[in-house]
Image (cartoon, rainbow over all chains, first blue to last red):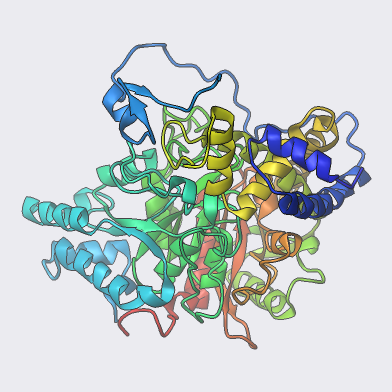
Length: 96
Length: 491
């Protein structure tokens, strides 16, 4: 599997919440196919039984006490919002 | 001689002796920026009013400068490091209106506590994705050694600004080489500390398992001094390591007798410029003359690092960048009719090409049916790459090679081909995958284009001290740090 079709590109764009044009779908199909093709060289390596590395340091369960503390105020949290109303973030309608 | 040809220690002596004031230093910084930034284009946002007020306050305190490690020292900050009340954009349109961030990154808090002066925010490839600064949506930073050339990336603004003599010091961030490669291209010193050494709190996340903040400076000594200030465990970053921070400046003993250097044969291959290779061999001779020993070694999985990295970094990025949705901060599309359209259009209008490409790649690699084949496979290869280093470090103290395969390239030369662009990071990426520390120090100028390039010194986990010791020994013997670009401020 080294060719990513335009339909696959559109599916992935939807998952990634990106709006793309037909032209872009074409371009991403080519570019992603090239990058995926390049990455398939990894299959030359036998990795059976090799643990995946998600984190390089040997660290587990870093915990802290769950204590309430002052952080940002509601006003601060809303300060950079594109739209707000009655102390809340405002977004376009979700349902018709 | 410019004020910025002095080290932090020398500048602090001048402050103590009342030869200069902090206000003088800060004014000089902005003067240099005004004189050179129409050519270099390094700064996105200046913090002038606040910086001058802070300088005045420090001058009025009348205390000895060495009471605080960074007392009065001007520093530039890469624009993906959050600064309270000072615009932070990651050079992206989606954050171009984030004029009033709510908090300081831990490194910024630490610099403030050390009495450094924040001069402003430096250009970068958008969200740190790129190797040339051509992916900035704001402006194209240029290499001070020749403004037809890129400064490297993604911390290109930071490296170019220091090289041009605008600021004496800067912070960058390094996910696959983003501190070291621009340092190499701009002829300055750039350090990528061990993963976990420096808190990532307030660093806008690109690839969380790879990102580290590091200093960019003219000298190894200053670099070591700044890392002493910004390193250490932070309760706001659970991946920051619970380890004491050594006095890195005390490691600068100029003594490398008996030091064992491994030189990977995979870093001296076709595609790595001959003149660069020759200079690294010369550098090894310099270290040999100081008593170090070197041998050729092998990092057999090096060739797979770039592919592994692009899968892992893009996958993590696709998750991290999901937070930019046009709801809580940043730009929202004005053309959307419903919620889903708002998400999609805000993101499509707000992100540039390279960022979208990596989000797409990462989303694909993490999507149902492909996760094992691409993402998990890449993480398994990451284990093999990490083991390569572990094996070498059983016998050797450091690994040395070029930082990048070539010098800087010309603006526009590689922009249309992502894969060629990614090849720049061939020798820096394995370091991030393994989580080990590495520095780039200037190692010469190319005979044909006269552009600088760097030597990379890679160390064991949390052994920045040895990396700095070797870098300092080489730097002092080689003396390239004394060279300055014509553009670079007062001569």
